Length: 206
Image (cartoon, rainbow, N blue to C red; front, side, top):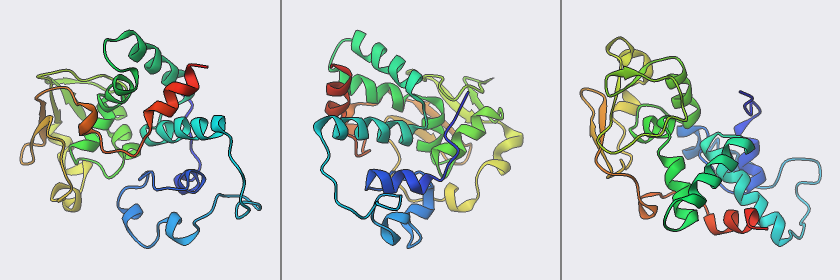
């Protein structure tokens, strides 16, 4: 499948906020938002008035960039979220959080979602003891996500394994065995990503 392969920092500059696409780099002085806090391009430093549609479109583009998915797949998530009971915006973000590559990232086994997607693609991750190499695989309650024994030393270094970053409360993570059990599905309040899902819903509702 086609994938955006350009510089991640360019996406952050276009969004005018940190999307945390490069893991630890985003927390250092090398972050592009700190160094060049204006949109990319020769005219990036010029102030431009953005329409309501432009604001909504940018929010959707930010969500796609954060989770590393393209338009076609994003539309499928929206359609599925709209059919589910509850608030469509909440359902959309919960579906994105349930992706296997996101769970690997949330568990602290990768420094970024790009890296976690690669781990899954290369067959390093197991779900309920079976190898799953589909990043978009949706986890469910009581699923156990683990790392193959031979792959544990390949995945992440001590910096990530011993990371003090906040871990999701809907996962029961065993750092020693590098496994995580899904206690419950994530809720909207569990998702700390800076996304205004109402803008996305307004965009697709036109």
